[in-house]
Structure formats: C-alpha cells, structure tokens
Amino acid sequence: MDFCQKSNKPVDLKIVQTLIVDRSLEFDFSKTCPLVCLSLNRTLFHVIKYEEATTLPKSWLVDSIELGGCKKKEYEHCIVLLRPGTPELLLELKRYTTPMIYSCESDGFIDDVMVAFSIAQGGPEVDGVEEKANAFMDIYTWSREQCIETNRGYEKSLGALVDTYYHIDDVWIIDDQPDLVDFASHVLTVPRFFGDPTDRALFKLMDDIFIN
Picture 1 (tube, rainbow, N blue to C red):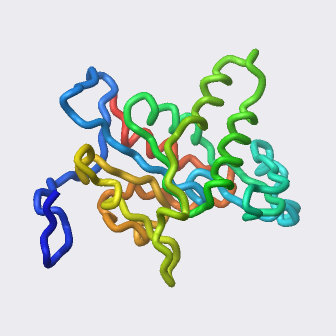
Picture 2 (cartoon, helix red, strand yellow):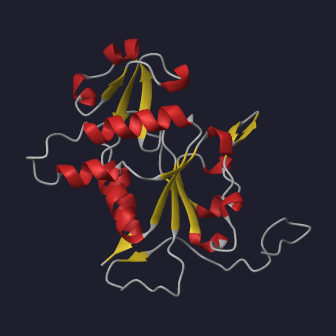
C-alpha cells in the first residue's frame, strides 16, 4: 500500500461510510472478509476490584465472573461484568467476518477472562450454551504489546494490521475510545460500559451492522 508523504494516509483509501454486513449474500471468495477488532474493558465488559463489588446492585453481578489471580498478576482479585449482547455479537462476527481481539490488557488477562466467560455460559444440557461458550474461544488476539503507550493512554493502530491481504477499508474496530485509534473513521463507537445489565448498546450495534 502506498502512503501520502504529507498525510501519512493510504493514497488509495476508498470512501466507506460504515461497516454493513448483508447476511443474505453468499460468501464471495474474490473479496476480503472484513476484519473486525474488539476492545475489551469498558467495551465488552467492565473490570472492578473484588472489594468494590459490594458498592454495586446485586442484579449487576448476576452474569459476572470472579478472577482470583490472573497471569502476570495484572489483577490480583477482580470481578468482571459482561456486557449484555457480547456472546451474540461474537457469534455474529464469527459467522460473517473475521473477529479479532485488540485490547490494551495483557495476554495473560485476556486469556483468563475469555476462558472464564466461556465456562460461565453453563452446562451443555441447556440449548445454545455450547455455541455461546465457543463464542469466546479461538479468537486471534493483539494485546498491550501491540498497542502504543502514550501520555493519553494505549493507542491502537489499525494501519499496523494492513498488509498485502487486508485493505484499510476492510479493517474495523469496536471501541469506546475512538480518539485512541489511528483511523477514527473506522471505529464502530459504543458508549463506555460500567456494568449496567439493562445496557443494550451491543444489540443496537448489531442492528446497525447486520442486515437481512
């Protein structure tokens, strides 16, 4: 890909308004499947210290998980509250796009929390549980090591994901902080999540992305 020396943007960048996926269309092997990255904390879930859980309504903790000691000691003891619609969104992305985790958390924490949420879906005798459990597994991950540490926080570069296979117009990220992404126009922005079980932002996002 060629970049403009003044703007440092791809010179062949096409104008794309937003990501729209038509479920009714058969997969076209001549076209690139969209790569959709996902941020985690405050986007798909909310992490709090264990002792802070007592300050939340009990209804907020129903689908939460408790992590006693994560790899690399990032969180010694924490509660993670899952955003409503997360497994449904992951499943839809797996069916029609290539999903990828792009998070400023460590590899160890990401592995721990995704496995824990997979297990937390319940027993196999419940309809749909196995599918929802698999939604959290086998997703390629970029973590804090692939972010750029700045005084504003950890920045994410969609441009770094562009190679001979992906064009920037095929790369997107679902995030609550578009100002920390190099291609802000390719951020599917959701409001920050703080644990409210009545939150419906991801369901609305799916309605915006997927048609038919």
